[in-house]
Length: 115
Image 1 (tube, rainbow, N blue to C red):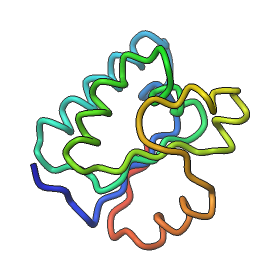
Image 2: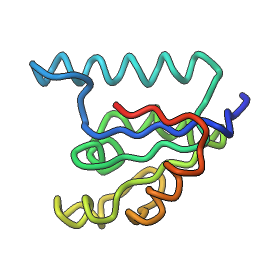
Image 3: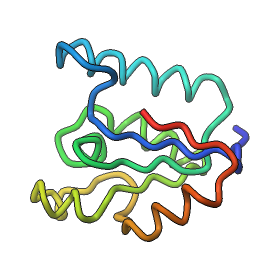
Image 4: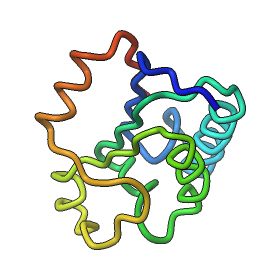
């Protein structure tokens, strides 16, 4: 599957939208599955704040994010967020990243989608 080397996706929450948590989780799952099925994969997905829960132990999102990773998308989780939520040792998909690397990515990619 082709990687769009100009596209960066930043996830800021473990849910999509505001409101009911269950609905937000369902929407996030549908979004990630639809994005994967589109065949237009981002070069990087950066998870910040509570979105780091998508990449850590116990998340049912590990499977879909692993599919992105297997196709070549780099999955990154904010190291400060992992530390804050005490999830450093529970990272299951991708690797930790710094805010400096996040800012560098935001400035270098042509298209940045932030959810």
